[in-house]
Length: 184
Image (cartoon, rainbow, N blue to C red; front, side, top):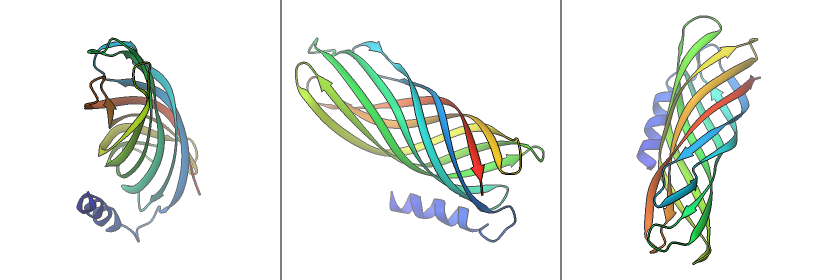
């Protein structure tokens, strides 16, 4: 994992002294959908996230983000007991942008995320698990002004859940979101 973070930083830092640089912050709201086993009674949720980044030039940025990945619930495949999960993630990603005009650009993100899943079950009480995995996403951004942008994007995160048999189950969470970024 340290090699991956080092490689991302090396690629991003090659443009560190170009024009169009600066810090930015942002927030987004979206809809998450998770893959889960057993009988899922709720697999989608409204989620929120906040981000901070540094734009090295028009094409490269490094972005840290906190994302609430949502809550979902169901009935365990082997135990038959009800459960609910709440998952959050912290991520660090390189962002590559392809400007199509002065105001409109496409972007892709690739990085690493640490997702924490808190589970409550009738059969086993409360427990949590964490997973560090690659995260990636695609989107579009429109610059309303030089300082304010609007984003629409898709992101994918990996996380874990604990099955009723106490096994760790890997799963993926997809998020479609709409957000705003402010550059200063």
